Length: 458
Image 1 (cartoon, rainbow, N blue to C red):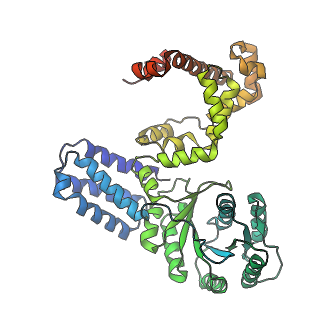
Image 2 (spheres, rainbow, N blue to C red):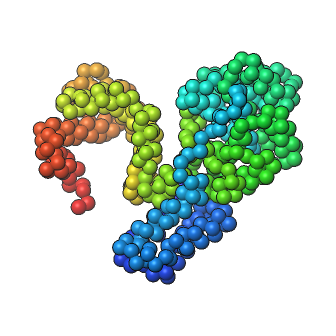
Image 3 (tube, rainbow, N blue to C red):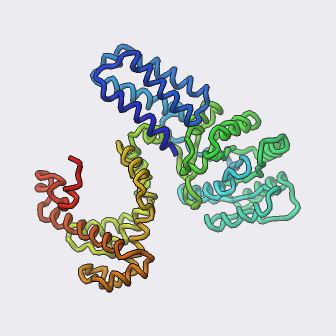
């Protein structure tokens, strides 16, 4: 989502890093570029002014200008100010410290992803907090809205309030809380109706529901793709209701990202969660310091480790690692490895979480790399017999044609897969032969295939 902003800021910082000394004029020029980048990313003007002012005040101090690496110092200052603008260090968890059943009120405009987000939060509370959750749709405006939430509840494995036709949103809310108390639920998530735009009828209805249920959390769901409109929506809801937190959806889109940088300053409410994708488990905590790190090209190693821990089967990974080291790794094992990787997301999203890999991610995006390559390789391996997977050397012309036809690929694709696997096998054999000490002495170049060595730009 922040790719464009990240690219522009990293261009500015690259210039700063190359200079041995910095003057106030150098910093002023750099901040002018930062200011333009933030405005182009749809960051609200008051937020940009405050951001630049704070960075300028800190960056023009004598101890920064006279330091050994002034460029790095300025980048650290920008990072610190950005973390503060995004909400400060650390994620802000959902407030569940209230008498059960804890009401969570979901508000927002129609189309923001409010109903889907309600289902995602229910699943998160069930899996991570071990809470007994009841989902209740108060949306009597949109056709099939209540049925949609019921289906999401089934997918999440939580309960939904039975639908009774003709009830008003207030009556549904009252019944939801009564059911929550009677059936001993920990949390009741109340999904309110949205509108295409903000109007008095919407605000009056949500205010009445809030007064009836006294929610511990009033979460505003906004679509990150709407940019400055999302900020305006947040301000309107906050002025009318006093929201306690924000959930930003479609964070995997190609929006400019300024809405996220503006939310805390405009509303005073923290971004608590972000949604990226339609899958019901595609919901993450919002960590300002990690987001800032990714924007500034510092990566998000902690996020990557957490994602791996969540999606990768540890026992399976250890088994595959042992086979690799023993030289018994075959195409069937490779297919299992591909499945583990694809669970973590796209290659570019994983690369983007590694420090200093912003340029590599951009190169991947610009190089027209086939983003379905892992799925294709999985399909090719699935089209092989078990004998072929365990002994790829037997795969000759006729077998390659059959595999290509069965996987919807070409013989050239099959050849690339086999070449890649052969290179990997060669590297593993050399690694086993050298051992840990030999590898440390000779470096990675000692195990790389000749074809890869020739392609290195140094």
